[in-house]
Amino acid sequence: MECELCGSESRNSVEILFEGKRIIACLDCSSMGTMIEARKPVKPQLAKTTELEEFNLVEGYGTLLRKAREKKGLTIEDQAKQLFERASTIQHVEHEKLLPDLKLARKLEKFFKTELIKEKEEEKAE
Image (tube, rainbow, N blue to C red):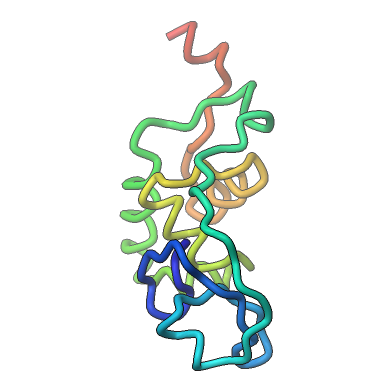
């Protein structure tokens, strides 16, 4: 899991209370807050395919989103705040480590005024 404070990848992470929010932190950063619970090593979640069964994401969606964000002059943290999402979620989507669910994909399309999702039938017709 990725530490929400320093951004490092760690298999051993803990949930802490930091500035009134529950976050995931590596063991090095865990002393910056109050430990809530130790977490077991977790494999990254690649996709929730059930919600995107009828849709495909455009190829290179992560790069497309990163360039659109940079064009607006936003940091990942700024974008996350405006979309009411976690910065780590935005970062994972940009690095294509996480497929956004349909709701997030639609939110990103609207925010950047771009197409991220194609219906499967459209793709076959091309």
